[in-house]
Image (cartoon, rainbow, N blue to C red):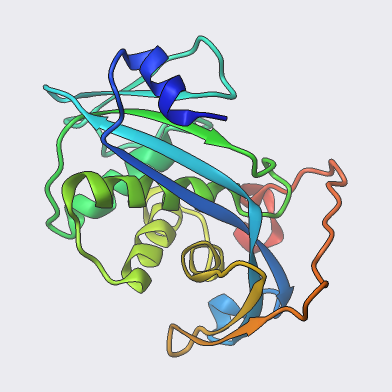
Length: 221
């Protein structure tokens, strides 16, 4: 997949920033991230990709390769209220959280593409948030610590969407390393160790097609 070429086809110009954010696997420590515990996790080969370029005005154009021939628009002057069931809430939520931190940005054209399966327990939403965050980071030169970028994504879900969630998903996407696990301490909010997998070993993941929905989970009731 050539995201640059697809962006050019959609927007008739080259993107100014590209980013990639992986999904995650939770190996040990289920539900301990929001209880200040330890979690062993891994970033996945499957990832979300973002291509971004500046545009004039306050209207932003969003497209996703999975939603062919559909164009979505958001207005930078109308970000305060999420729309139920609208995936662009994750984009708007990131912008709201950056504004809350006093970070300036302008309008943009965005193209997304992802190989992270939706509602499969691999944190497709965190991958989307992180890919968009890092594209904005490159486009506007936004400097935040990695842990703070993770908090931006978490705040999208906690404050903007009203969902309960910890930092595991965003941490795994941001700090994960190829062929490695990461051990995180969520009391100190830091990565304690990166654990390389033995040569020749890996994780095989099967998509059961049973949908996982954080909104409807017991944790969010």
